[in-house]
Amino acid sequence: MAAPYATDPATARGRLYPEEESHFRSPFQRDRDRIIHASAFRRLKHKTQVFIEHEGDYFRTRLTHSIEVAQVARTVAAALDLNAELTEAVALAHDLGHTPFGHTGEEALDRLMQPYGGFDHNAQALRIVTDLERHYAEWDGLNLTWETLEGIAKHNGPVPKPYPWALTAYNQRHDLELDTHASAEAQVAALSDDIAYNNHDLHDGLRAELFSTDELAEMPILKDCFARVDALYPGLNYYRRRHEALRRFFGVLVEDVIDVSRKNLADFNPATVADIRNAGRMMIQFSPALWKDLKVIRKFLFERMYRAPAVVEMRHAVTHMIDELFPFYLHNPGELPKQWRKEVAEAQSDEALARIVADYIAGMTDRFAIQEHTRLIGGTDVPPGVTDGH
Image 1 (cartoon, rainbow, N blue to C red):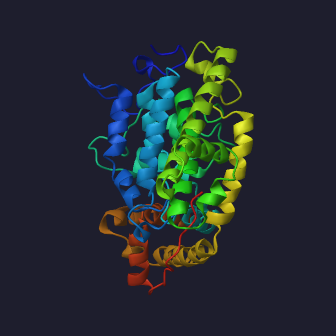
Image 2 (cartoon, one colour):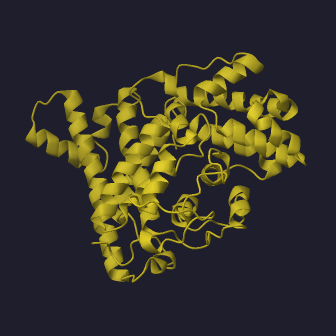
Image 3 (cartoon, helix red, strand yellow):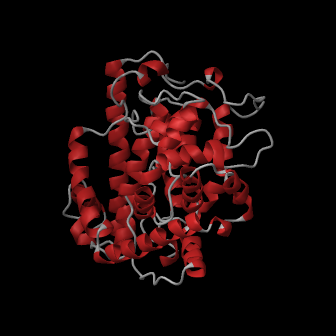
């Protein structure tokens, strides 16, 4: 039975463009399905999570990361009696706006776009699902429900002013109430992102040999996980040992969020989803003790993985590619594909043209960005290392 503060599809605020709803799928199920079938979702297969997509078949990409986030989100939502379909839709869409090369690509594009309003991957995700996916006859975008759009825009909390230009542009015609918190479902998606990447980045860092199992076994939370495995399975093969420990780590994070969030909700006792939005604080949280320990692990990942020497080398290489592609397209918009040229012809200012170029580059996969840079400008040696994750 759904909690009183869960988002009820029967009372959803609807879509920007009214349409007849399905007889066998809820509005949020339709949102989820439209996201899965979107071109931008497929492109996540070849976008960096931590490792550039060609570096190994086992490393996470933005696509597999998004699937893992959605799996965690559904689990937590069900445990809290929330709407799992809305939670899943927000989780699957949360990274649609990422550029090639992870946050390194985003930082480069944001710097280049500063004269034109900057670039933000969360705002770009909203832009994709409300404008840039152009497959339907009657509207641009996916025409998602207000609740899903709200979750994409502000799953991390109220959006500070000044709003990114992409959010401002959409919000002027469809108010997402950016100064309030999102639904509990969207908050679950946000925490599930943290759970997923903290877990799988440890897996991928071990596989890449950026740090050792012994180092992890001395860290907060993980120390207890390894101790439990060793007590249950003395002499276990190292590969199975670390997998058993990390899946217990995963479980600790999920259980902590569920336990703390249940207590938060019981103490606050919201009667409606509006109470969640206007609570003034996040309802879905880690415990202070676990968050303190998790910050130690995050610092370790930052120093040993996201800023490892090979990562820094890769950051320089891919930043150089974005730095050259952006002005090239800005001065040679005829090199954009045919379907973009109508917009180029209609662009009334340098700012409008720059945003078209940013949309195009942000949509590139890692491999396509490398190929286009080689074709248009000249080869850039991409070192066999990693780029940054978070």
